[in-house]
Structures are given as C-alpha cells and as structure tokens.
Amino acid sequence: MDRGRIVRRPPVDEPSRLRYLPAMPPKRPIDLSVKMLLVVGVFFALVWGATMAIVQAAGGDVLWTPIAITVVFVGLQYLLSPAIVGWTMRVRYVSPDEEPRLHEIVRELAEAARIPMPRVGVSELEIPNAFAFGRWRSDGRVVVTRPLLGLLDERELRAVLGHEIMHLRNRDVAVITFLSLLPNVFYYLFRIGIRMRGRNNPGPLIALVSILVYFALQLLVLYASRIREYAADEGSVKLGNPPHWMASALYKLVYGAARLPPEELKAAAGFKAFFASDPSRAQGEVQSLADLDLDRSGTIDPAELDALHKGRVRVSAGARIGELLGTHPNMLKRVQRLAELQARGAFRVQAPYAP
Image (cartoon, rainbow, N blue to C red):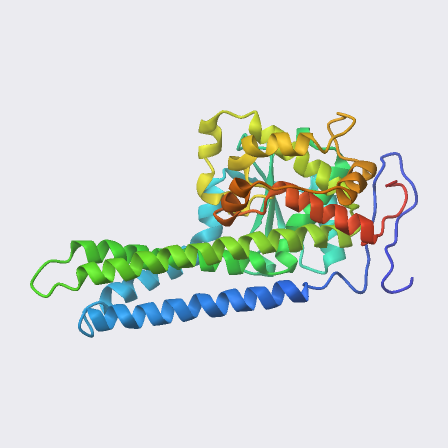
C-alpha cells in the first residue's frame, strides 16, 4: 500500500463507503496559522495594556483582586466549556451501535486528518447544523443535530463532517473557545467601573477603557472565527470532498434555518460560532444562494459552481458591514471560495463517488 494514497475498500451494496489512509494528511494552512498568531498577539497586547492602564487608574492594587477573581472564573469556564456546550446544545453522545454510519464517516475522516477519533454526538436542537468543540485534539467532539441527518444526503453530510474534523485538526476550536471567554474579563471590569463611588473616582475612566477594549477584543474574536471557517471548508475539500458537496450542504443549511421560527434560533444564539453556518443570518442569505441554483434542483452542482466562478459576485455594502459583526463569512463569498477551489482542482475523489 503506497503511502499518501486514498485507498478504498471493494464495492459494497451501500454507496460511498470509503476508507482513507493517507500518510500525509492536510496540513494546517500557513496563512491560517500566521493570521491566528497575529490575532492572538494583538489580542493579548490589548489585554495586557488595558489591564495595566486600568490598574494604574485605580491607584495600584485596588483592582487586582477583582481581576484575579475574574481570571479564575474565566479559567473555570474554559475547563468546563465542553460540559457547558453539551448541556446548552442538548447533546447526547451516541455509540457505534446507535449511529453506525455516522461513526464510520467520522472515523474515516479522522483517520484521513490524522487526529484522534473524536466523540460523536447528536443534538436535539431543531436547527439543522453541525459543530465541533473541545479543549484540545484528544478532547474533540463532533456533533450533528437530528434535523441535519434528515436534510443532507450522505455526500453532503460527509463534507460537513469533514469541515468539523478540520476545525479539530487546525486546533482552532480551542483557540476560539479560549479567546471568546477573555473579553468577559473587561465586561466585568466595565460593570465594576460604573458602580464605583467616591471623590476622585476613577470609575468612569475604568468603565470607558474596559468597554472599548471589550468591543475591540470581540471584533478580533469574530475575525478569527471567520478565517477559520474558510480554512475548514478548504480542509474538507482536501480530505476528498468535492467543493460542490460542501456548497450544496451550506445551501441546504441556510434554507433549513430560514424556515425555523425565531424562538428556535434563539435557543443556541450564544453558541452560533460553533456551527458550520450562522443560522441567525439565514433569512438574509436565502435569496443570494437561490440565484446560484440555476436549475432549481435544491442543490449546487459543479456546473453551477463553475458559473459562479466565471461570473461576478456582488456583495452589498450592508452585507459587508454585517459580515464584520458576524461569526461566519458572508455565505455568498464562502461559496465563491469553494468555486475557486473547484476551478483549481484542489481535491481528489475516488469511486464510487462521482463528481
């Protein structure tokens, strides 16, 4: 058996049974690593500078106790985050006997990416989506919602699971989880500042610095969240999933979320950064994606991706501004990136799948 090849088993009754045994798995993209390092560097420079400014404004040691308490609290949140996410997202971990095909796909993709087999779960949320979380690679968990299993065909499901596996491979889940908790420190300091009383009160200055740093850190977290989505899409393609599988899956996720009542979407609003797509923006994304489905088949095929690549994508100014405040890239731009991957031929796929 040659190293670096994708090896498939003999044909069986069920289509799409592939066993991936690559010796050289997809590497973490260099541009993602560089951008993440820059984000983390700027992030902690802001944290350190703002903390020193606030402590000095407060007269030295006045705020060290609440800062220490807050940091300990954030650390505990990080350690308990898998349990918090699992409980909030109504996750139930399933055995291979309960969901044999789901386990097999995740195992094949994990082997292809050369990461430990993650725990596999099913969420009872009504939002069709998938997500990965965990504090480190060996603590990885991959979860699909129950509606997703009925919405996607197996090829689309494989592409989405490949996307989630690559989040674990790229280690961006742990980074985003940790970074997203730290802005809370400055939110708590903001609340302390507005409650401070007395002569020569530094409270207003503390509150102002804290809230400005809080928003700056949130924007950095959102930016990091968006770039990791592009990297995970590309990683799924490199695992052998043609770009149009992922494009079709995203198309269906948008339509599935757009049909839900607002109260269903609010149930997971605080954790939408974990999802493969942002369900809260589905209503605004429906029309732009509908224009890509030229034959109105409900899927996006290679010819439609090719037409997108050759055409001109126009994203409105409002959508661009909204993207800056979002956890995920603009969906039209994201599908366009998949079209570019298809044009470059940046994937390999073996029978019984056909492009």
